[in-house]
Figure 1: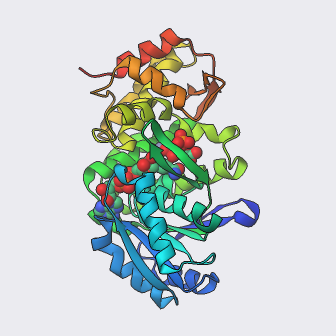
Figure 2 (figure 1 turned 90 degrees about the vertical axis):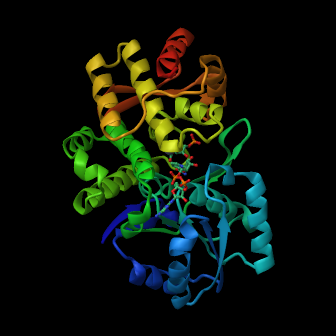
Length: 362
Ligand SMILES: NC(=O)c1ccc[n+]([C@@H]2O[C@H](COP(=O)([O-])OP(=O)(O)OC[C@H]3O[C@@H](n4cnc5c(N)ncnc54)[C@H](O)[C@@H]3O)[C@@H](O)[C@H]2O)c1
Ligand SMILES: O=C(O)C(=O)C[C@@H](O)[C@H](O)[C@H](O)COP(=O)(O)O
Ligand SMILES: [Zn+2]
């Protein structure tokens, strides 16, 4: 078992990483001081696989748990589904100390976290991430949100969980495509923060793809360490935290333009990272060889580098809804090398459009 601490003063919490975490989770629940009535939010894929088992662990810890299942998929990250969850919470009589558990991928985590942040102005929230992407990224750091028709994650909050428990054995049922998706965000950590980690991924492609135990623990723990280090310094994304958004300016536009259906989040991020690397090269910040290294690792980890079903005009319009856009200027996270990024809001329109055009498949 590995632990990573997210240091945020009174809001600090542990990320607990291991294979089978029954005892740790039960002990945590017993000592947390929660009200008895609890809600476990999961989705229609994960619930049937793990819902009952997790409910039993939480009940052994003294809780009375109602499992609420939402349809799997990004379309559940909506105000309409959120409203249904509020209704269930009220009907169940959840009070201000009633915990909400998120058992699933990033969709469940972002949505359940948004409910926890807003129901009664905030109730305790615990993340139990089951997808690789959720384990390395969405369960950590407290960004919770739902989507709006005009853009991704536009309605949300910063709301930290009380703890994150990830049982890596649950990934045995994760579809291959979802493993690749998680790898998109893992590559991101190498590019933005840790050149040695990027090189590790390059050198261990087979173990990484198969989630071989030692490689899986290393890459999940290292990703969590990097995210925890960044979030601990800048919880509310005033500056440094923007680096975690590398590749996301184009990614969110791609997701929106393809109706959140054709590409899942990590795939869109992979394409967006190549786009951001390309902009960096066009501005003379990195060499073409760096772009080639990023593109090659993404391809070797079975992720796309071009998007179908988008136009430059639509994508260009979308980026002005990016949360890093201030006073009409898009703050791009760009590369200075592998392992180092910086923010720039002076990227000329023609450079952005050219880089977008290069990312659009026929
Ligand atoms: N809050 C953040 O900081 C943050 C960070 C990154 C991504 N996100 C958000 O996370 C979402 C993407 O998360 P995701 O990739 O986990 O998608 P997801 O939640 O849709 O899960 C992917 C698929 O895998 C299934 N699944 C999950 N765990 C499984 C398991 N153990 N066995 C079998 N099937 C399983 C799910 O049912 C779903 O079909 C996006 O909405 C993205 O915006 C948020
Ligand atoms: O935690 C962060 O900060 C991130 O930016 C992590 C991203 O991987 C994640 O997709 C996040 O939800 C994007 O945030 P947004 O503020 O651009 O919606
Ligand atoms: Zn992301």
